[in-house]
Length: 177
Image (cartoon, rainbow, N blue to C red):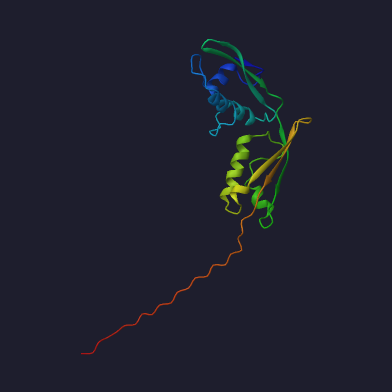
């Protein structure tokens, strides 16, 4: 059962969770379906893509009887967070406007986890930055319901010189008989 959900109906959350009465209990699978599944199809992503940055979900085993476990999934939705500031740090050669045009998060918008992931992917595809050093630092402010987002980049060395050359001779030879 679901407790604390007001944004989404329990039946809808059941369809996202995709665990039915009689299924074999697998705590790892439950956690994956509740929080940060790589596919993005989980309860936490559902809420975080709609601005609920302060969202929390906690599964509680309320009854264990022989081979059955009753779960109560407790949700704290919090309030929706809006983006306050978006900044970029670490760029020394690349102009801010080149980076900012790839960023999907804008001040005033609702926080959206998928937009942040998409921004990271698009910054990596530019080819200017070290993919392993790309980062995001959300700085939430629960008091006023906002979040500042800092994108951290590390530029690749691009000051390489490439030289190439070739030499060849082509002579026509005629034989005299």
